Image (cartoon, rainbow, N blue to C red):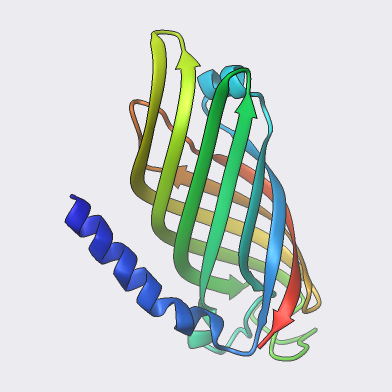
Length: 186
């Protein structure tokens, strides 16, 4: 299993230059994560911090390779003697919704977009739940779907749902509401 995870991670990292090398903005993202597991909400609270790094804006509707994007996302919470830290690197497809290039600036579309990505995740947790304390540091998988709105080239608001592989009976799935701002153009 570990060999498969390492192979998958190496493949995703090899594709990273493709996902960032299309003359786009690289930006920072900040959000609030709402875990779906009621036991984790009771132990740590209803809202966790989410932050990330990724491409800001949406690709043109007719450019296939521009649709490949990667994302690095972190989720953390520390409360009541419990802690969670999740790091997810994912690669996938982003498509503008609407299909035309109206509002395009610098190769990007202002407007609604949808992303579907998959990748690898690092899970570091120590949580006391009914039935005892669960802790570990594991590598697993992440899948996410995002619906967002790009406001020009530098600003995005979005809603993203993440699904993580299970660890010690814990599910770290949940919804993030985020804003992102483009900092670097290359």
